[in-house]
Image (cartoon, rainbow, N blue to C red; front, side, top):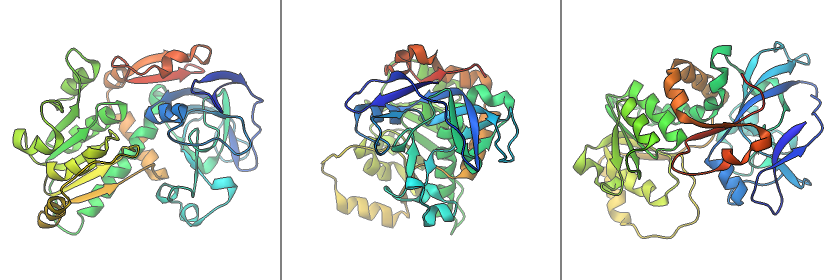
Length: 354
């Protein structure tokens, strides 16, 4: 079968041939339809994130996928059922407390593998196998957009945890901001427009621009960080009840505290590289304490968050989802899917039309 992989010592995706996998007991064989490309895939290519399966000279890429069940193999799934796979798996097949509790998303680094990222092959191949417990059934109508379920699962988890941090008192948030206008940021922005009175999105783009058009289309306000840095947002706009950081720009983690309104909460999802810089730790500490602010980190998502992400995709207008898709290509011509420019929002490698 055809697969798109990264080889050791390379930083370019490559089309290779692999044997079609055979499902083990408890696994289903899935025929791949589409696989999305995101920032993590670029980090895997550059070698700044992730790691190869042990003993392998390559890793099949891709962790945002949608497929159709080819062989249920006694799992209880139906042949022809559309599914989205989750990402995390038991390290070396050995369970631990996080998987036993069905909370693999809460496992610390080193206590899991992630398909297409670290330790295990991904989904960018004609077929893949997966335990049925890690396959989320979706409706046929949203199959063309199934690659958005995985990123939105991260948003659903972050929102759940944000609410949990404020559950000790009556919290009535009205304003929210997304830091970052990549595909995850824009998907999240739409979700925030459904739950908050006012939504903002921070970026560094000039008009005309596809991402700024999306921000306008969903009724949010664009904040140009070149004109208004994160810590000055309350002066130019308003303090934010909720901030979703999706840039991986390390200073934003601390500037977020200053941008929050009293009782506000910030979710950090970006993964920065090592970076030394100065902050006023005393003022930061005072701000958090005296204004009851909260800052937390979130990565990956649980099974229920994937199901909730699928519900968001189902609710989101098709024209907005189409707006995000800027490249659809096949595995034989995969290079355009990994181009990273201002005219690229979401690229998709399509093995078979949904």
